[in-house]
Image 1: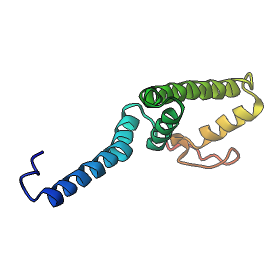
Image 2: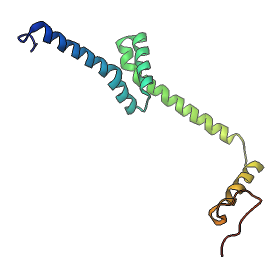
Image 3: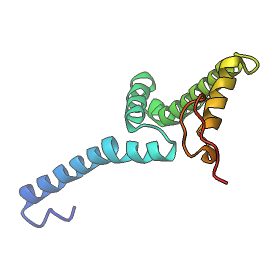
Image 4: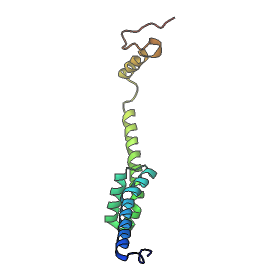
Length: 126
């Protein structure tokens, strides 16, 4: 310890307090933010997964918490995107409502100079 020769109790206590505070800031703020960006996870999810992993399996749980949370996130995102794709294709073929919506979009195209609606169309300039 480099602080032992210089005013032993005060400098040493301040140095130890600084190390403890820095370690807590790094553990609870910096690391979850870095892990979250690396694995595209929310820092809150990272912190919660670390706490749950530590409670369930101790040190081994902390080591496995972030990869497990990332794997769960990937599975859930894939499942949600699959479910969304399933609901959009469940309607079957293009119906009458879809064609009228497409017709309304075509009526507001650049050739019609921004006319709105299907009933009133402005002829293109010659």
